[in-house]
Image 1 (cartoon, rainbow, N blue to C red):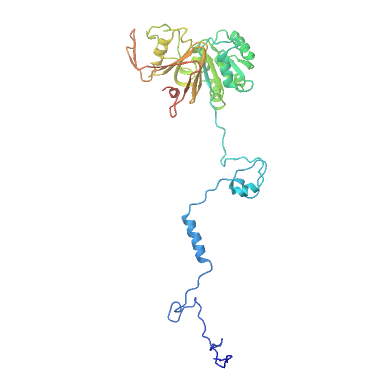
Image 2 (image 1 turned 30 degrees about the vertical axis):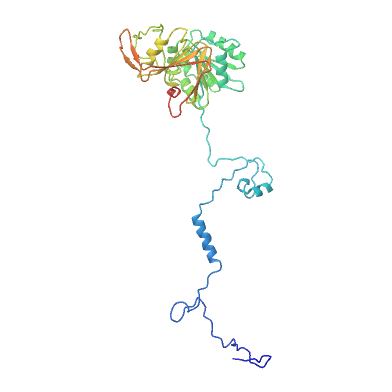
Length: 379
């Protein structure tokens, strides 16, 4: 101990020399009796509480939602993308050139099913030609469409070809003749080459039974169905060519009058190309009074949907989307799926619970969501 004299002669406060002080025990060193030294608090790490609070907040807060960075086709921006910046940061940066959002997954080409144009026959082929122009517009809304004319149903195929070629060329389309007269023609590679690049295929009138026999199951049939489903090929048919578009079709000239006498010649119905499943199509409907025949056909096979199309009228069907009526007449739909039939084999047949739907030119039927097949267009 050392003492120092103050200014008044009194001794100053006594201070301990550095060598006289007791050695200080570190907080991390345990006391002789075990544990930490009494009166000495453990030393905390610098910033430990802040680190714990930050980790605790990260556990409680939801993860930040970040948007994927779009890619640029011309230039890749350096650093963070503009969409990930704050407004003031984005304003300070110049706009990025040609930024286009690209999906992270590779998208394949989605198939586009083409339209079906069922014409009731005897359509106008003059300068007006509203029905044929509507078919051309479906095939190529902008540009020059290529039309393939299939005359397999006609007994005078060359005359039919010349008539339709003049009509289509007068409206700015290119036409080619697909001459199919026997089964070998339906499997000919030359015919497949003709159909490979067309936008519209038209079946002319004639005998629908002959047309179905020549095409059903052939290479031409398989090609046109594939192109219709995947490439958007528009398939049109007039008169007999319209009847083959359905799953079933009328056969012969029986029961064309206004009576309800059934067609007892055969209980079977000829099969069509089945582009419209569960549907039977009749043409020249009002002109030839074919309501009785359509009812008879629709009540067979466990109940079908019948479509009667007037002359110079067409039903443009976008499968699963819409049905549009164009032309000067109307389209009649007969729903016999829930019809009770009694008196089969007798002169008079009784039908109960038959639904009728009639659409004039300009009528549009929208498909109901969730409904399958052609029945989606019916209420």
